[in-house]
Length: 198
Image (cartoon, rainbow, N blue to C red; front, side, top):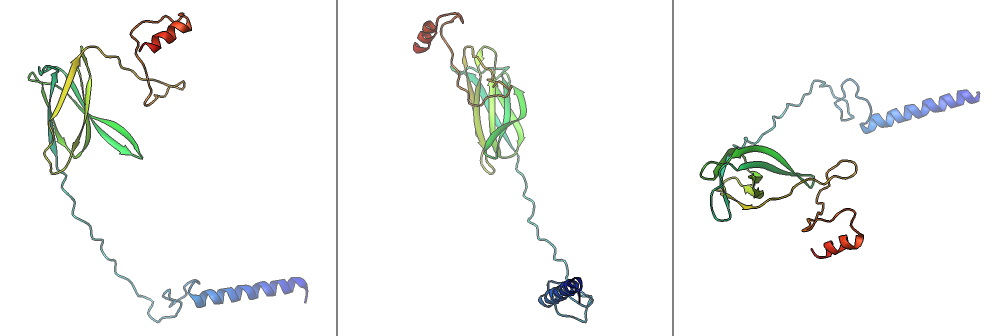
């Protein structure tokens, strides 16, 4: 017998032994009358009924309203103030503010937002000649919504966004405001002196 014949016979023997072991242990292909247990059966039409999935009843989402007041430091209502409401969502450890709605404050300084589901909201009030103010409020199912009071202080404010060299906003960037104007051409000693006097 040639070596090629011996190799073919050995390969065939290994395949037959492997197939026999798989059939015996239940891992082989299912044949006619085989119900998957590795043992033949005369009943090949065995079916398992499908069990319906029990679902919880849907919970009714409660809607609430939040009302509030915008006034100055002396308690005077500030009609015409713009109040923006944003929903704060914190996914993946990063909080994001999603715009929900915007209202103009009434003549008596009041505002109201309706049809709100539970969650965390940010209210931002802005009026020309006043520094803007923001307040975060939690709306919880089953509890009375809190009244939002936004107090604007008179004076001007400077706001803006700090960008990195690639044009992306820089979160939590530290900035400083100076009481004096310092010319760019001023000597380093003068610029440092202004910084130290802050």
